[in-house]
Length: 180
Length: 197
Image (cartoon, rainbow over all chains, first blue to last red; front, side, top):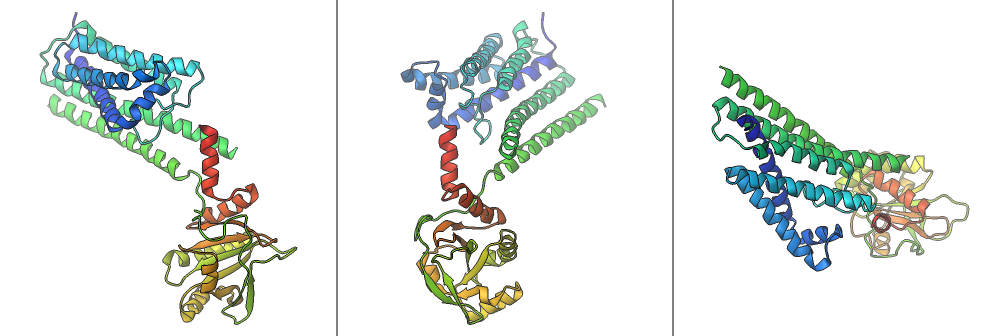
């Protein structure tokens, strides 16, 4: 069974841009990266730096696979594994009550704290990528290219918007508390 | 035909999504701007909590005015350092006047510059001449390095709050600092950071 090429294109574009932005953000904030990973308190302190760079490396591999279409099934599986891994790491820290640590998303200048919304976002993204696991027909008609790329770009903008709205929601809650 | 219309539709949808994203970012920026603002204490000269330097200065009405010293039963005193050559001082003068009125503060403007220019400034803003002193020595005593600078002195002659002010929020932060017993916005923010860490 194969998925419609338009859906596959959209999923590949969405996944590739999300991971490219994530890797770029991590590289831009490389000095804080190890600290952010260590803050999750899931690994021994001395493993924080190698773990951080492994994550960045895996993210780059995912982007490569999703963009070029090489070993797409493996690349997609890796992407989904990363997303679920991040979601788990956040969920564990939320369960520990450590919601104040930085999520390490590095998507805006603002520090973004952990929240259930971010866990849900990761799981939703993982679901969006699952069609690619079913195998993809590489040939697409022009209309499918247009639909696929349009939907992918749009989904990426909505993904960014979601992150923005989550941090806005938190800030308004803070403001309400302050003026209560 | 179908291709072209599809392209146009996607362009419209993506543009809208980006527009909403940009709006959300802007709201975020606004939130950032309304983070607590306050007068910036410059950390030189007599510090908050210390006695204000005592001096007698001549006002533009040729009367004398006291700076510092105890004034039992008196109001809080607001010293506002200005200069005719400082544009932001001029734009802030009406605000300072209304702020001092609403908080029932005893306002004394202290200038440093040409006497004529200061008279003109006082007239333009309808400032009472007996509450406006040309006293560079006061600026030196408080070691005012940047203008407009405001100092709040309590009835015991102690500096209750002070700092560089650029807006009404900054002026109000002086009152809040006085009421909360904090010395500056830096101290408030430091307390906030250490609480949230």
